[in-house]
Image 1 (cartoon, rainbow, N blue to C red):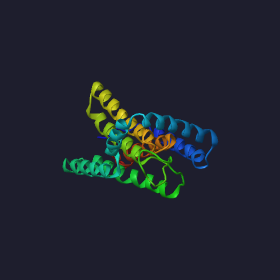
Image 2: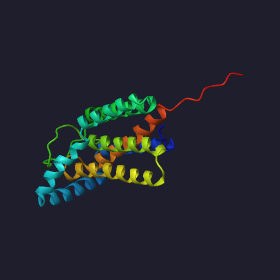
Image 3: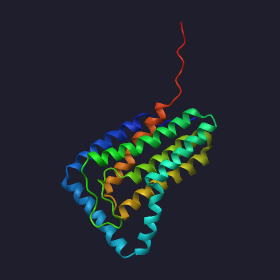
Image 4: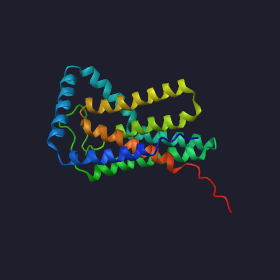
Length: 210
């Protein structure tokens, strides 16, 4: 079983993602100033705490592309082995679609990352791939676990999943690997793709003859 949030959620997330992309890619001055101000705040904080920066360099890679793909493949195989075909298809769809979409965006859209960050990445930055991966993984866990858990279990799962997605996004800003708007774009991408994938694999109700 897969929980499915209201269809309005991914549609609103998609609209917000497209609306965010326009000022980001046109360097809209107020948003650009906000991005730079927040990034400089994190730069000053990180300059004074090299040990924290070193730890974040390690922790942020839990949501890198290879770990995300490996985790998605293993989850797909496990669910398929348990004969939960729709859940397996759901995991496989998310595992493939999310990296493809943010990868295409990095290739097609010109949005350079902050200069002289605590990590060096040469590709474009909108939306954040690590953030998209983390938020997508968190949402998959929530939607798969929700029908199987009681109220307390659901609360714990949603809290832990949200904390994970937020943490990874913040590491990308703190390390100056991305602008804050890149991270927001990553969260919105996951909120668009994962619920739509859940709808795409839902069980079809048979049509009765006569």
